[in-house]
Image 1 (spheres, each protein chain N blue to C red):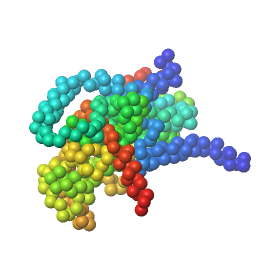
Image 2: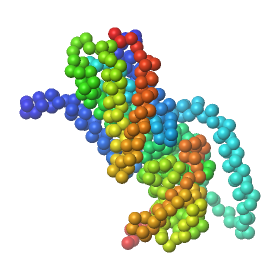
Image 3: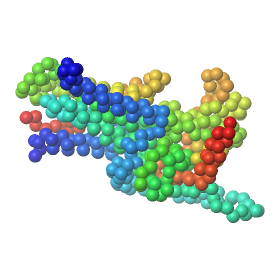
Image 4: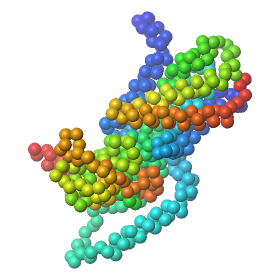
Length: 270
Length: 169
């Protein structure tokens, strides 16, 4: 016993190193397959407020450019509004989707697992698994929330997996990212029978309870058959400039809970 | 006051964390180069150390940066490893006599100091990027990131270390 204790005391630095290293490894590797760590992320009080102070200062430098971008978006939305077909039968029904505006406090796009921090949290009824879009297309899904902040798992994240379709043909697949270029994401599992043309628009599919259908994502840059020749791997050029995002919108689906419950109960029947 | 090692290293700790998360993490030079200049903490830390404390500080420094940048525990892992292997790297760079009484950075040549810094940086980047991606199919991407980010970090660290050089006593 004495010798064991002596042994540990002699190598106490190595033991300390090993212990802390195992802690780090568990945190890191667990997050590769599971959600981001719940306690240590930038949505928390100290980190969130320091980052938002920083962005409050640095945002002034891009104010003019950002204003122009928002004005352009307004213009586009007005165009849509004025040209939308009026329904002959008006149904008084509460909208399914609610929109919450937020500002980006921390953006990041150079790592293989990117998270964006925004300045709305539980207090503004932001919850996990809500969709987030930027002016020109989708951005990601809310991952963690604190009182005033939330972190968003960007589509530039190797863990991200979002249902998307080719707009003109309605064939759908999953949107992933291979960590190589922050302007290009990959759409996989599009069946071989689909017609794919370079320049076609990719938008969100109807299979997801997070995003509404037909939110733009990007255009097809090039495509290839995958290794076993059964489906297409498509490179998608994003509409959003992921390196320069300030204003985002969180989408809240009122029916999501109902949909999930229904799907769950259907699953139980089998 | 500025000679009090606890105060000095505490100040360095805070300033390096702030510089890292507010400036260097947002640099994205050429789309992906974010120099990791907090390596200077390990370069500047006193030679005679209480090793368990140093290990813990290295871990903590990385971990605080991790929390700000949502990188799980990658910086913590890199910092911890640096703190652990620093004596070995020092022996390699400065020879066995660095442990003797009276050894200071003043007796070392510039080349020796830059080699020391370079080895620390390369080690830090290898640990960080390997565990960041953790996949053999991305080996080229890992190597590319290690190489270019190391060069940027070395360049900035040498600049910063000569900017804030103090009289070695």
